[in-house]
Length: 131
Length: 131
DNA sequence: TCATGAACAGTAACCATTACCAATAAACAA
DNA sequence: TTGTTTATTGGTAATGGTTACTGTTCATGA
Ligand SMILES: [Mn+2]
Ligand SMILES: [Mn+2]
Ligand SMILES: [Zn+2]
Ligand SMILES: [Zn+2]
Image (cartoon, rainbow over all chains, first blue to last red):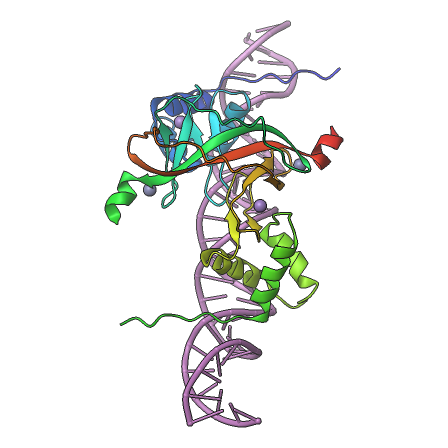
């Protein structure tokens, strides 16, 4: 009989979650680190990474992954979609009815398709004004 | 007046392109390295990375940056879509009419949306049989 | 208040990818 | 064919993001 491992609500975990819920910027782990350090100056980067993973695991936050750029995190877990700036990697929310793609006809040899999601790409204002 | 830099077709670049066109597995850079080394045992991993980038730049191959820890590469540049195994990261082709999502109504504050693409997720046969 | 061990800070290790550089070899003109 | 130019190579060091380790701390329930 494996004992269910209990989780403790630490000050660090609390602050990380609060800070993530207060912004719409989809920060990277080191950006979260910078935000949280204003309130907990002695927190370590490893603690930030560990808690971001645990919070994503438990469904309290979203982990946005894309190979080649660093992971980003989202305190808003209500269903919505994202745009990614192809130049700087910044992520924004898409303000629209979440249109789920019809994947009923999709076949892929050697794979069982479980879900489909639209990934938007574009340019953020900061990058657009640079060009 | 900047001189246009010319590109040379080296044996290494040739073999990398050929090997990529011969498989449907969407290999990672180190997997390409393993494939190419059978024909060019003295090739270096850096050369593989450099050429994968150049070939993607010139449009001869695709660089797939979907979620996962490593980028993957595709010698098939005809329009098609991909599934990614959420357990092992393997990527497969989706055999279906390419349904481009309608992004005309999509708005994202602070972003200019340029394109949208369906990301399929699922489980590959190898992982499915493990469960 | 105390005992337990989950979580911590600090730091080392890891892994994918890039950068560097002297040596090599495509490309092209003679 | 031969020589010249310089893009590209192999080998290796460096980078950047993330994860692993370890002794100490502190959240939690008895
Ligand atoms: Mn979001
Ligand atoms: Mn493909
Ligand atoms: Zn940008
Ligand atoms: Zn798999």
